[in-house]
Amino acid sequence: MGSLPIETFQPLDPDVLVKESRAVVDFIANYYRDIERYPVRSQVEPEYLSKRLPDQAPIFPQPIQTILDDIHDDIFPGLTHWQSPNFYAYFQANASTAGFLGEMLCSGLNVVGFNWIASPAATELESIVMDWMGKMLKLPSSFLFSGGQGGGGVLHGSTCEAVVCTLAAARDSALTKMGGDGITKLVVYASDQTHSTVQKASKLIGIPPSNFRAIPTSAASDYALTPDSVRSSMEADIAKGLVPLYLCATIGTTAVGAVDPLLELGKVANEYGVWYHIDAAYAGSSGICPEFRHYFDGVELADSFSLNPHKWFLTNMDCCCLWVKSPSSLVDALCSNPEYLRNKASDAKTVVDYKDWQIALSRRFRAMKLWVVIRRYGMANLMEHIRSDVAMAEHFERLVAMDRRFEVVVPRKFALVCFRLKPRFQGDDPSELNRRLLEAVNSSGQAFMTHAVVARMFVVRFAIGATLTEMRHVEATWKLIQAKADGLLLNGSCDKISSSNGLFSL
Ligand code: PLP
Image 1 (cartoon, helix red, strand yellow):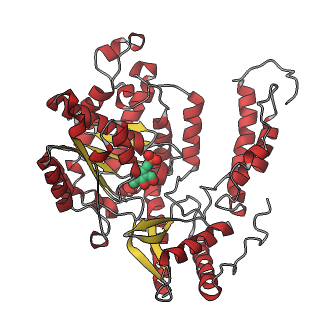
Image 2: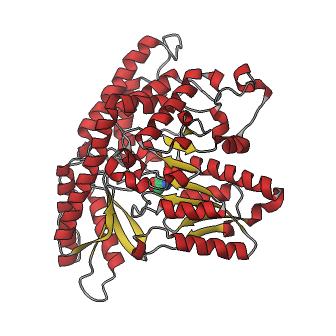
Image 3: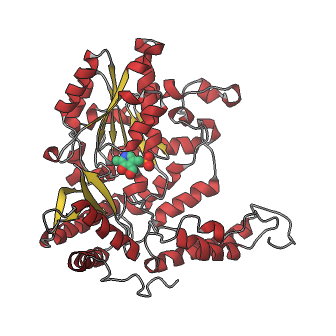
């Protein structure tokens, strides 16, 4: 229960802050030094933690060192180590020193810039950083504050929030034209590869679930959405008296990294007068490299565009950039104007009040973090970071292609390789085989990958992007995968490499 307090209670004493934050920084630095010693995917059973922690909060204070020891002993076993160099699952949440420092500054200053006067620098830095990012990505000037056409950007915590907000803007614009009770007629279009966040967001803003179209894709288009399929879906809905509202295209889908043809889809969206959003949550960061910028062709036709620097831009969680051509439609849908927030600058409408560009009122100073990352690394290093991940993925793809027992299922996009072990005999269940292969690798603790199912095919996803990953990790993981496959194909077991090799003795 801790010990009796002997000092006065000063929760923001600068000297204690220095001492204890040094202890925390040392702890985190040691964590990164030792990270390869932990099993990448946590190996605990559900509810392991309640067996280790007391079921009551302490009454008296406890020393930071005791808390850090408990994190090491009790929390670490239940962590899946996202910063491990052998983390290849989902899409990464890449951390960096600059991202961490930016997060410290954001947290240390702890200002809440919901409107301009609540912290003018927070608002103004956000607008400047969003324009910097937009220029790095060569977004059309219609998305930038400096473009002078009314556009601009905002930082949210997640793509889900960005999609909810843009959908709300689209919905309200449409309902203003149609009349208030038309919501049951509005239809949202995406592909069967679009992130589930869009379906969730459309439900959240009141679109009937039956009015969400997950248009099928196939291997023929590398799982990209085709303009013809969107057009026919919209035509069929219009014939039923429904009203197309919103189309979401993706650069780098979650399952296989597919890229939808932005230009052609944009033409369809513009022709039918729907709000056109582009979700580039994962792969958007690659747009700063000229060789990937062609994937963005057609972005000029979009109404809104979002990407997550917390995935592939060395920015610690959380950070999602959203640009809109017409922020006034966002503001119309999301603004609130209570008396207690009124002030001269807002009343004069000469400033951005970001509370009206998002769901919540309160907001973090995320711009500080992104600004520190961009300044500390510069475009040159940020491009190098993307390129080296892609080079490692290319190498991994070649290794897979050289082993005839395996196949690359979808041509690699960005730093994501989707592959599978081919069935040996007719009648072998390839999904079961690959499920077992994946589990064998993940339960070894030496690497963590996840899967996707496309065209009813179970594929293993190998997503490179953890900041600490080097070529040697990729090569060692490939050897691990091959050894597990040997075990599966020769003995029907995966025991060739055992997890009891003393690696995880911390
Ligand atoms: N869109 C894509 C393409 C994604 O890959 C993801 C997550 O991986 C998301 C959206 C969801 O992002 P968030 O968690 O920021 O809502």
